[in-house]
Image (cartoon, rainbow, N blue to C red; front, side, top):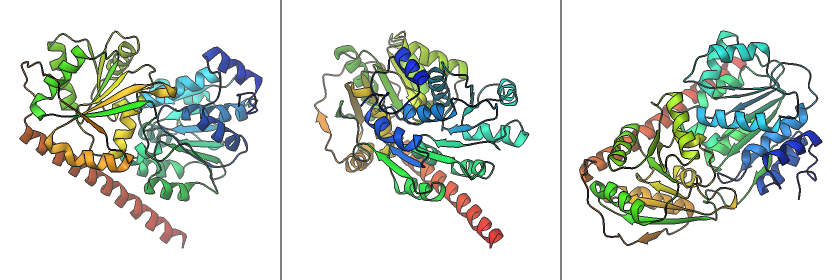
Length: 418
């Protein structure tokens, strides 16, 4: 099937050719017809399969002839990197139309965003928190809204954004087309879809929580205080052209990046405490291969859409099994191949077992190479266990707190409407 066979406008087809898109991916083939037909939609596919185009192309097509400068489409996404990335995609697809777009996210001045909103923009891509600031100030108005997209919906739930999303839903028209896209289809996602979608079509590609076919997965069992030495050994002995390394916390990301730099590597670093300029510089350096290695936390890495990442390294095993799927989806994008290496200490074996149950795969455990020993000030096994327990407890508390607040609001709303 071609993009032309999907019924896209000539101006969109021209943009696709200019951007190097040759044929639609499976999720695009399944989702675009439903979206063009005006149906509410759930789209579920692995990371890197083209979900962004699956909802942006139909929106641009349906707004192509719009002359009003009121906001007609709102795309909500969990992180600023992702908001920037989607904004760039929309801008590229709409290059041969008169449509305008604005990306709204935190970490930068609000005034340019206020100016863009007040001038009028057709498509707004936003993170929930910053968008609520603009709604509350009166800068963002959605009385003419026709389309709502929740992108990375599973991640928005994991990050506790559900209360903010509900507040936004209260401020936009009920008569709209709503689309929700996710890499996984958890019970929480299914529950949310029943609350905000009306008789949705479902476009699901592949088995739930399945890593991309091109990802070769493997495990190294290693003491926590030897992980840095093992990582350096692998970087020096294995052909690893472009390496994305995931850490559990910002503090640990800072520490590892510092150690790798001390050992002579060019390293980029992104996490929530980095300034927007620092994050953009790190991503740009990684994209152009100035940095061979990028160290990141889960939240910050959600906006990374870079082709050609050869390896993903889970320096810290994620506490949430779905985070594992999201992480390794950064490699082997768009039918490419890549490798995901996970460094597992004794304290992390329980998290690994949960991951293997989710992906229904016994991941290959490789023998340790001869490790090149170096000066290592990283955490001990005892400290690693403490951090693992603390992080698991914090994640559980955050999720329960968000759910409790959401349920309280729903009960209050039900009483008021009774």
